[in-house]
Image (cartoon, rainbow, N blue to C red; front, side, top):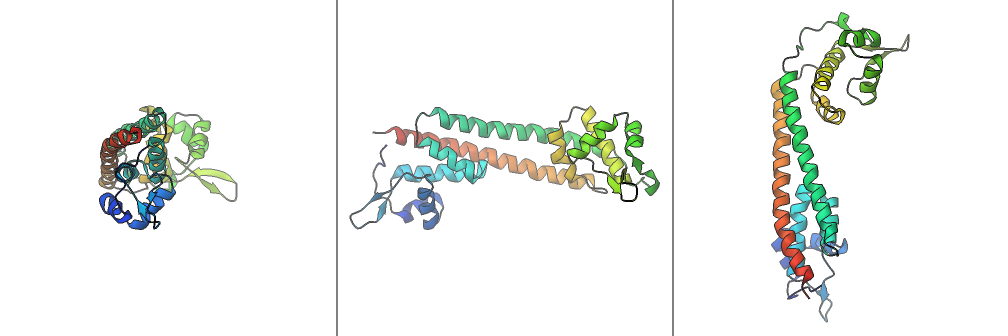
Length: 239
């Protein structure tokens, strides 16, 4: 591996990558940047490979987070290249799953918008067997939803039994609708916390819009990172 024209100072790499001098030193310490050359006076000297590494890490950190970004850039300094490509494939696959789950969540929001939230009364509370019968599911299904944190009933202290309050009955109806439509439990775990009693559909739509923007930003960051990594691979392979 060549550092190629090791004439950059720490401050030069910092400015080029948009980091502080200390952050550049930290990246070198963590193996994201290969070890710097040292002058006879002990000063660090970096090359293009260091700048490319820092730029790749910066984009990756936005796309996949700091820890995964460090693993990917460190893999770029190692051979075989298959390890790096496998990590990148996993990152893109993760964003693809998020996009698909988001599409399901948006469709779910339309379904949920039809659920009444103002027509519940305290007397509408139900026991496990009552609610299971009302929904046409087994009591074990409700217990599973409880274990997954989707619909958690209250426990009546005196009897030790579980009762579903009106808002929980509504949540159970929503979960039942979405499960019948093919929604996975892991998707519902993400969605249900955004649906407290009385939450307006506009608020849910706004939350999903923010999530959509986040996925788009991270996907674009991965695109930028791919270009930086491609340039980095060429430098790593240089004699």
